[in-house]
Structure formats: C-alpha cells, structure tokens
Length: 243
Image 1 (tube, rainbow, N blue to C red):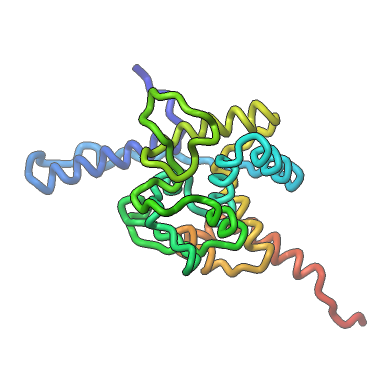
Image 2: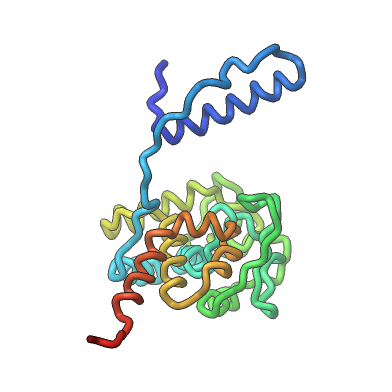
C-alpha cells in the first residue's frame, strides 16, 4: 500500500530506516547499507504553527476561563512558560517549587532528554498557588480515576493520581476552540505565541531558549522571521539627523 506521506514525514522515516541499516552494518549483520544513497525529498519551508491574532488570543483565554477553568490553567502553563503540552501532562506536584518559583522538567519527560528548570512567571504562579500541591506523587495536571470511569469536568486537569493522555487535551481544544469559537489554530500554537509575546516584551532570546529547552541557534531558526520583524520595526523608528 502506497503511503501518502508529506515530504517531511518521508524524510523522517527514511532517516529512521537508514539508522537501522547503519547499525546492522556496524554489527556485521549486513555487508552494506542498501538504503544509504536514497535521497531526501525537498521540504517546503513553513513559518510553523498558525498563531491566533491578538483578539483571538483574548477570546480563547476568556472563553476557557469561563467554561473550563482547569483546562484554562493548563493552557496558561503552555503559553506563559513555554512547556510543551506532553511535558505538562507528565509533571508531578513534586516538580513544582512555589517558594523558588520554578518547575523542574525531568530528563525522561523532556523532548531533549535533559534536565531543565523553568521559571514560573507571576500569572502562572498565582494560578498554581490555588492548586492543592500537598501530595508530591500526584500529577500536576491529572485525573481522579482511571480511564473508563466517569467524573465531573472540574475534577480533572488539576492535581490528581492518574495521568491524562495527550490526545485528551487535543480533543478538548478542538471542542472548545476550533469547533466552539471557530478559531482554527492548534493548541501547540500557544507555545509559539507565548515566545513571540515574550520577545516583544523584551525578554532576551537566550532566556526563552532555556525555558523551551532549545539551543540559541534552534530558537533563532524557529523565530528568525519574527525577530527580524521586531528589528526592522525598531530600525524604522530610529531618529537620524536630516540633511
């Protein structure tokens, strides 16, 4: 059956296959890497996730705060702190230090498999201070019962003993935002929108890189167009002597 992959997915899977064959050759299970010369396909350059406009962003947060407060907190953690949704759902209450205003991301929960500490910005600090963090083994954003059990909306997406699946957050976002408000942006866009807003507010790129768990070079690559836009605006507004 022919796979209808995008060029990006094709390249990703070819990369996996090449790695396997390279390992087999090194272990002398094969004499040669028969997929070594398969060329990658050209990928179209994109500007990443479509982000909500300022008014859409305001509507999103106002709507979530009104209809599902705990999911609102989840989205605020992503937007303000730049923590990936999957990473948020793996956090335990013990990873949150309200006194020191930091959240610890463990290597096994991190995308790049390394420790990192994320500063808790004041809007999120206030929200988390209202959570019951007394049980360190509880998930920060969890559910009270195993899957298959019924419970009320206000009982989950808050400190609880059972984890929440990533696709549960995706479905809630689709229900509340894409279908409910008609705003066709993904939940993950909050992370990128938050980074843009931090750059506009004057936070330096290195600090944002540390929060996100990216190298400075990777962050520059992702946000190059937005950074240039800020710099061009600043350049257009400078005052020079007129001759």
